[in-house]
Image 1 (cartoon, rainbow, N blue to C red):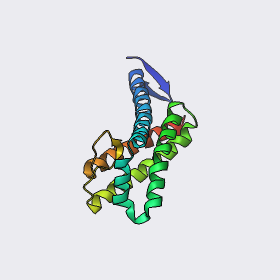
Image 2: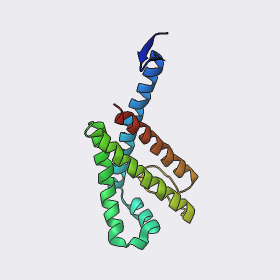
Image 3: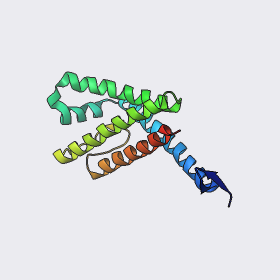
Image 4: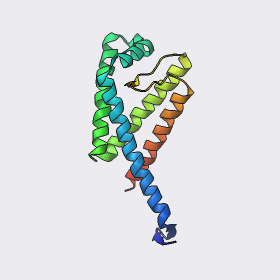
Length: 154
């Protein structure tokens, strides 16, 4: 097996290639998730607005409409920034914060016992509050954290 020397340690070339492929696939996966999520909410906003009214209705209708309008635009913008490799570190930081907010929202909805589809991907994918939603958001959060750490040291 071929090896390369980096930082005075031997790393198998195959291992390095697998890691790089993991980073690349994960990077574009996150970008696609953001784009699909944002576009889905714009195409069919009713489900997302419904879940915001149920979960965050105490904020008032104007704030709910503002969130329902701005969030998909932010998701699409961040997805495009990643796809086009524009300010990647900054975009990954923003995605990190976004996924932290999504994880907190999933935990909040689960604790409160909301039994509705979150509207995360419009009406394309059914996804109710619960442990599955929390785990999904935590996995996405960890992936973005790994990508950011790699990007930070590049």
